Length: 228
Image (cartoon, rainbow, N blue to C red; front, side):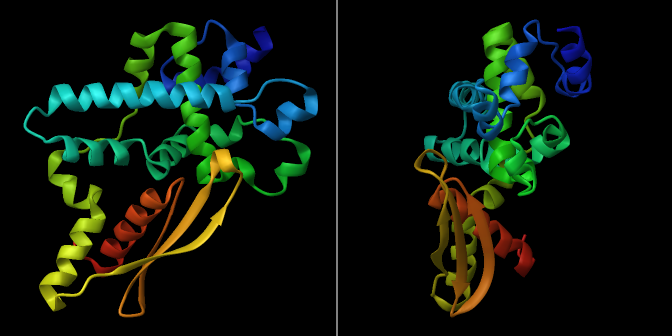
C-alpha cells in the first residue's frame, strides 16, 4: 500500500484529493484490457457511478448559479461541461494517460491517449472520490476542475444553432450533418460527424453520441470560419 501511495501521489496532488483507499484510485486507472489479464477489476463500474455524480454536481451548480437561464439553456451548458472533449482535456491536464494501466496488447494502440478513454477515466476517478470521501468531497473536486466559462459563451456551447443562424442570414440555407463513422462496443460507442455547406466540408466532430459529435463538428466549423 505504501508503494501504491507514492506511485499516485503526483496525481492526487494535481487532483487535490488524497485517497484513504488507494485501491479505489487504482481501479479507476485500470483499463478493461489490464483488468482482464490479471483477473482484477477495471474502471467501468466506477465510470458508471462517476458519470451520475458528475451530472448531479454540474446540474445543481448551474441551477443554483444561473436562475435567469431557462431549462434548455442549462441543458446545453451541462452537455458541454460533461462532454467527452471537455473531460478528455481535463484528463490530459491531470496526465491520466501516464497512470492508466492497460494490457500489453493495447499499449501499442495508444489506447491510453484516446479522448474517449481519458473521458471515461475522469468519470471513474470522480466515482472513486465519491466512494472514498463522500458526495461533498466529490462535489468539491468536480467544481474545482470544471472549466471556466460564462453565459456569454452560449453561442459556442450551442454551436449548431450559431452555425445555422450564420448561414441562414447569408443564404437562407443551412449546413448538413453526416455520420462519417461509428465504432466501439454498444456500451462505449464513438461517433464521427462531418458538417458541410453546399458540399464544402466545414468541420469534423467526435463524441460518444451523434448529438455530441455534431456539436463538436459545429464548433470546429465556427473555428475554421473564424465566426466567433
